[in-house]
View (cartoon, rainbow, N blue to C red):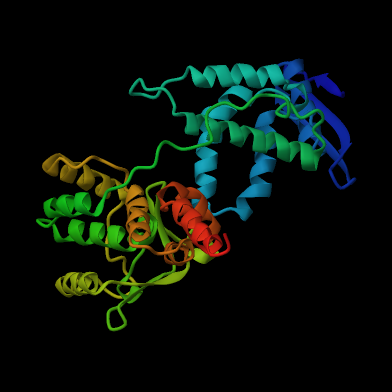
Length: 358
């Protein structure tokens, strides 16, 4: 290292190095308070420029963001970044990538397990697993593309649970009882009507514009999704390519939507029909449940409720998946316990088929 003490008592550093593409660089910087600070800056610069795993975890996060952010939806990256900034970076930020060991991850996991939210509650098992998976993704990226060896995440046990909490949903009777409490507020009523009777996602609901509805054909076109991010309204593509779809609307709902749109002449083409956020819906659900005594579920559980309704009506996983904008195999796997068992019918049919030959 070429570190020298300047006449004014500060330190300067000067060196040559190569970047990741082999080009030679000449670097000079002055004004460091101590020799160790100057030497540390040189080490960090060389590690980052050469993409050496001697760089600090904090610096690798910048590379990880450059690699991954363009490939993800903005809302998806915002979720990942929040977890990184609040749960991962504070612990590992100043450690060098090559120095992080499995025991460091275990100690971080233990600290996370014992952490509490502002209301005193522990993090849910699924949230712990999600954070743990994000840390693993960072180390796996470093190992796969930047030569981190060994990968400290390989031999550590995961924390949390992969499966979400037990699925909740309303029966048709429960929903109809709940909807009575919504009728005094036309906007709330029609929003819950659309969610329950079509099964669309809340982000899809909040992105609807007048042109989304073809009231002659009784259809609703899903082409985008709404998110509130950093205080800004954000319209993005739907969750998956298959999510772009046209949904047939039952006649009664079609008329309810027509009446609501006719009453809202202030909503212009291209403007969101429902200019609220999911927090408004959560507040309204809390109000409706308190007024009717219906058990409280999440807003997303209305989508599960719609699936349960369709299954009870005898529709196939393939037909339901087309309506939801999902793959049939995902519907089959996630809602398998709701589909009626046909094992008894199979056994009876096989017995009858074999009976004539006995």
